[in-house]
Length: 203
Image (cartoon, rainbow, N blue to C red):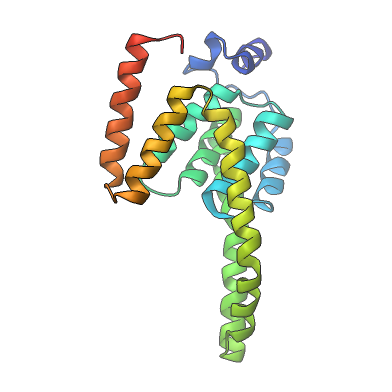
């Protein structure tokens, strides 16, 4: 990825749609340190993890443009499996090729693995999870606040038009209020987006 390509990507220019601008721009060691820092802050499930990547990679370091980040997020949301980790692997690959993708993917899961091992060791050693349950009960409100803040942060970037806000609200109502299956909601949103794209492509 050349410097001028990255600048165009950040402006939302033509380089944002290029499929071939994944050449090394960021030093691998610097990228590894950044992914390590991200992995230590990814609490609150996928929403919190995505918000941390948004803040560090797009807002602060500007290693990837906002539009490319959102496009990648959209694809990862449609794929089976954990979308946040898929997004991390893709961005790691985009910045540093296969090695970058492996580093991002491995570092992304290490804190969770360590936490699970620690909790398992506590359970095996003491046979009582009352203390652990109490700790997580206390953490639950904080995690909820992290998720809400993350959704608001990402939503402000993704929902840049009233039509997109209407689609988001409609999808939420369909899922939470009427229990419509997720694939049906996704297909309907895609159809609405296609129609809007044809009628008002600039928006």
